[in-house]
Length: 138
Image (cartoon, rainbow, N blue to C red; front, side):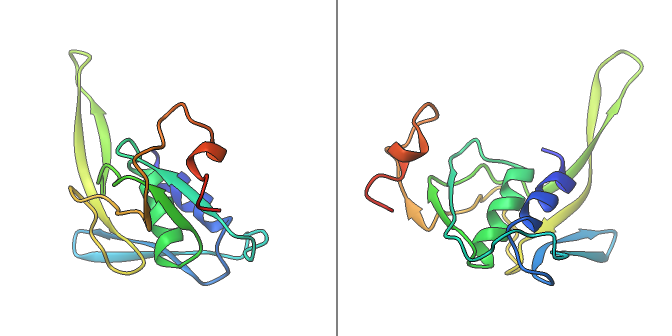
């Protein structure tokens, strides 16, 4: 996932001025905050995650969980808390270069750890509907 996409989607669900993530690179910290483009932020929100939830999806998950905007349901996420650029090499291969790490609004570094859902649910598979996954929860 593309980091700015995770930030932009999170902004849709957060009130203005709410922290989305912090990017730490070369000793500098850049803060990304919601800017008021959000829709109705009072509607209950449930976010389904599993071990394949990574990168920009984890930015969205962490922003909504840390700001108590969504209830996260599922299993622990992948844990990719780094921002990388892929550089093409002459032979057609490529190399991923880590340029920064990101921290969640509560200051968590999820790299290699992932995000623990608010409600653990191992009964929800990748082909199950949201209704199936949230049965008995909402």
